[in-house]
Amino acid sequence: MSIDHNVQDIFVSDDHILPDSDSEKKNVYLKGFLDILGASINKRVEGTYGSIETMTGKKLIIDQNGEGIKENEIFRKVIDCGALPVSGPKTVPHGIVTTENFKLIHLYGSATSSGASALDRAIPIPYIDGNLSVKVDMDATNINLDTATGPYTGFATCFVVVEYIKIL
Image (cartoon, rainbow, N blue to C red; front, side, top):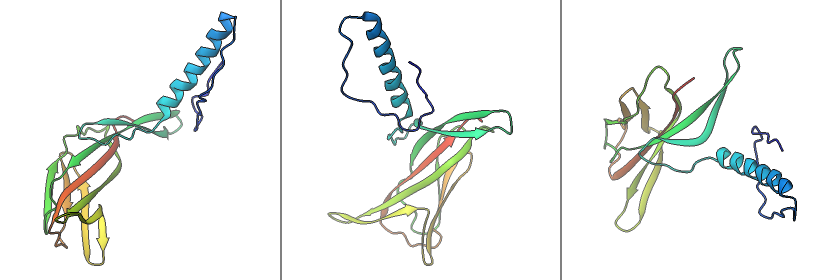
């Protein structure tokens, strides 16, 4: 049984009936099932967000200018940026090794202001509301936040998510 590993959605059934007596048929069936199961597991998107580099389970597929298709694993790292600055810039080291092979895929975040007993306010980053904004970018060393059009008093928690590839 051959498995098409390029299938976008692979369904793994949860009811299986093994052939009764023929061990060769059982082996073929089990191998096929394990191939499908492995392909399904490998195609899933990893839902882990953490402060260490994690493979997301997503891939960036690029045609290399006529040199063939190249699949690139996408990695994720979450940077805890602490409190948003009330008004002005802030830099936080991200700890990602960036070489000429580093390519940014997605950069985004959020900030939360908690009240005395509940959530007061939460915003996505980057954020624009009229004249107010929170900007985010990164360089080889740092995550750079800028709340120059603040004030952002009380946003004590800020996370920035970096998704990237390392090799093309």
